[in-house]
Amino acid sequence: MTAKGYWIARITVHDADGYARYVAAANPVYTAFGGTPLVRGGRFEISEGETRPRNVVIEFPSYQAAMDCYRSAEYQAARAIRQQAADGEVVVVEGAEVAG
Image (cartoon, rainbow, N blue to C red):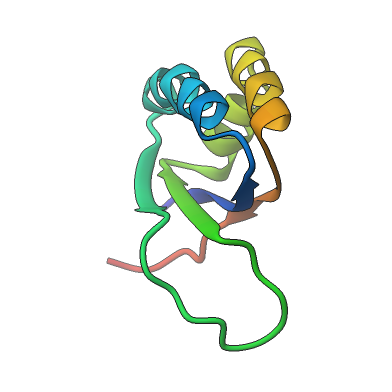
């Protein structure tokens, strides 16, 4: 069984209209690589450490698909929009293999 891949992002939006343009550009790219948003903002509580106001988790069918999506020319174009509208971090993580 192949482990899934995840994007974990913590974002501070400073231009809501610009961020909306990013979301519109990025969503089709996630979909093309099999990505499914699991978390997009929503209520949260800081349990430890520092955080940002927006948290995002996107699940991909594999770590390779997650990396391929991030490295794609299409996502890099969307990323450039995001970097003008928000600050944050994106980490690509390989999920645990779970016997099913």
